[in-house]
Amino acid sequence: MKQLNRNTVSVPTYTERVLQFGEGNFLRAFANWMIHEMNKKSAFDAGVVVVQPIEQGLVHLLNQQDGLYTLYLNGIKNGKVLSEHDIIDCIQRSIDPYKDFEGYLANAENPDLRFIISNTTEAGISFDPNDQLEDTPQNSFPGKLTALLFKRFQIFNGDAEKGLIVIPCELIDRNGDHLKRIVHKYAAQWELDADFKTWIDDHCVFCNTLVDRIVPGYPKDKMETITQELGYTDNLVVEGEQFHLWVIEGPKFLENLIPSKESGLNIVFTDNMEPYRTRKVRILNGAHTSLVPVGYLYGIDHVRESLEDSVVGGFLQKAIFECICPTLDLPEDELHQFANDVLDRFRNPYLQHALISISLNSVSKFKTRVLPSLLEYIKRKQELPLPLLFSLASLIAFYKGERDGEAIPLKDDPKILEFFKHQWASDNLDNIVLGTLSKVEFWGLDLNQIEGVHGTVSSYLKRIINNGMKDALANFIRIQKPVKS
Image (cartoon, rainbow, N blue to C red; front, side):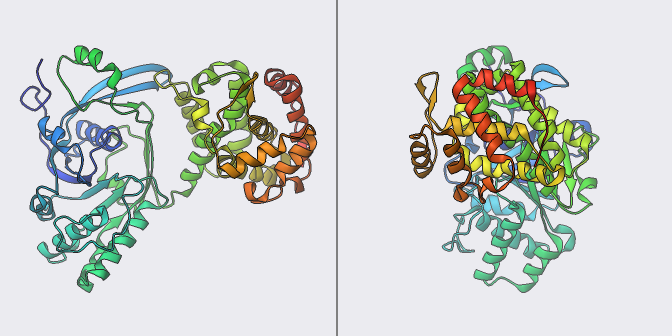
């Protein structure tokens, strides 16, 4: 069977405008797919040069396939379950700077280079004090980047038109700001020209980003079937979900440089990404965390099955649309569209997302993902958000560590597990709730001080423990009424 490469398939060649640090599954299923779409549907003409950021990597496989690979997108699109695939052709070549540092640095001389993209893991954007300008290469990604930027500054004599737009995709807060600070730190340590530092500030753009797409990666267990379907050998097949979102915080002119709208891509350009980060944490992550103890104690093991159950699925929709969305500051139609997209992602039949795996560190997750919605709802509505309090009661029941007579494999900080073990040694459910809600170390405040919270959570917990989750949840949905705080 033929090998996928540019000799066996006919694909375009593009101008090298993007330098990409990272060759892993996520960038290939996310950023490279978007570049591929913009190349097809607009005049973007953006070729990618991939740089292997660490000594061990996959660029040799990319080069064997001339940068080509097959991407499968599986999930729900426009209300329909869909699996589709395409050969992604935007990667023109790949470089291992540990074997060819001069070849890597030569990219600084490319007058067409405009963008730098990265995904070097959360630990990748870090400062290594041992990195030196003379190293070939520097150990850290920011060290390599600083060396390349300084080379470009020298080659083009600080030309304002040759500044680069840096768009990191690492999952850290304000990733662009953090990366820029480290570049400046290297510039200072290496005693580089003051004019270089000014060029970085005035003519290079470091964007903060939010990225969102589930990428299961290489479908090892399905490759025999996939190879027969494709009719060629591809060692770099990657799978991703249909949903995608890229929020890019940067100057207004970026919208004119990146043709996302005419390409139908969900790329948001903004001067403030915080509302979008909050939306993701509160709706997507908050929905997961709210669902876990309810769905699991109900007897369900996976996210998709939870949505397929009318009772559990109905509960989650009430939590999202009635309690979480009203606490956010984006337009209602945007919030509801995002929420519906989230529910479609949860229903994705191609993903098996176990509730027990999401339950890791549920206490801290509730604090960061759900509690802000709970408190903001009370502040805005002067009412208690009952679905979120039911989820909190379910969380306390979950940490009892038992479902239908079998032990729940709880995973959390040992101190938290020990606390709940001590709490559940008591038969007094009111006291268990009192002790849990008063744990300032968990929540940042004593939740008993909010009028109505203790009584409401206690009543829910008693029903869950005494009657079981199915009865408790059915009863909750049947009689739910707003309670003034």
